[in-house]
Length: 421
Ligand code: PMT
Image (cartoon, rainbow, N blue to C red; front, side, top):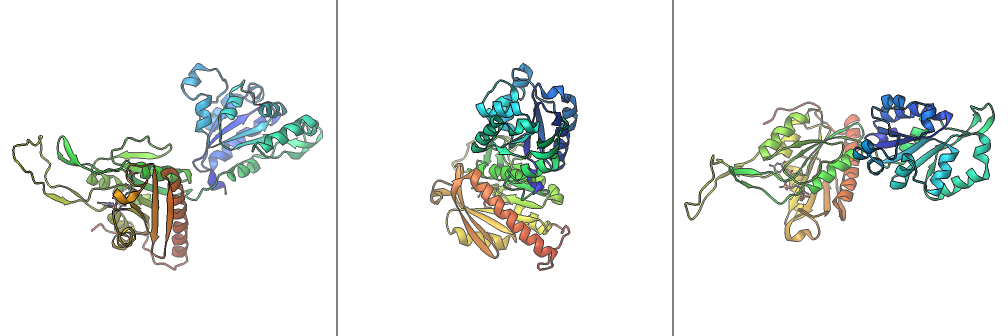
């Protein structure tokens, strides 16, 4: 369950309570499980613990002020709200809960909470009389009805010397509950390499052969793999898309460049996903200066490019390899042939051209016929971002199946690098 925190971005809000010192342990545990943490402190919280402590533990400057020109230029409240995958307020004082209930935005933490639509969890910490006061009970009821997650509080001896409910839950418990808000950590601990976009095959210094791939599908797959907890390398042909957060980006131009970028990086890759539309052929000769239109016709001799997907599987048979197939006819037949001919684990086949409907090249949507040796599945037309998450879910599932059968000896795999031929 805790692997779900891998690659997740957590805003940790700390409010004024004696339990503020425990927030340090929360930061450490979140980071231990692969989460990135940004701390926002209220003014009252800084009376209990210095921002420097949390800066050292989180590895990032602590955010304190709503109207801070430096912070607004860097990571202001809107950016922090957008950056976060979840917000945890620990400890959450009675005053903070009351202000959250009425939606104040007069300090940075309140403004971040208000500006965000990601899961918000609070870990109340207060004297037991304050916790059982009807005003606090009412605030909690309203917050819960709005979807705010209430973690705890625990009962026991309190800092004031009294006993009762109101102690902040222990950091391990808080972190465990926070992990549950994320749906997947299915690829945590794995290295996924994704190729995306078109390749450009030079004819002369000003011209090239290419195709209509925009990179949208491959970039969505890379983002979804990162979301699922993987370390992601994205080897991409030339596209006009922002690199997904957290993903290592290797830009390339030609199919040969892509091959050269992929092969040495495969050493520690667990899952390879080839979403790039790689040119099968390139001009045999690249003219050193611009070709002039002296003749009525012009012939180019094309030679085969290396097949990256097939080479990866041949050289690294233990890696789980997923190819795409872009087809204008006989989708299923071509998908099965590619599965067999390239010896890969899965093919995500999609229509391009007139049969693609709302999907295919350049579009924001797509549909996939997912094919593997023992089965197949239709992933219906959906935004590429959503489709990519579904695809990653199925890849993770098949990866686990293959991994388990390899460990139990059901499937004989060679876990060593094979010579490239
Ligand atoms: O980028 P978008 O605009 O979002 O469009 C998405 C897409 C249609 C490009 C994408 O979903 C897709 O289908 N990508 C693969 C396109 C392709 O090249 O298909 P193919 O059937 O020609 O190749 C089969 C597989 O072999 C692919 O995984 C491809 O990356 C790989 N290949 C092909 C040739 C080659 N020389 N080396 C390869 O590795």
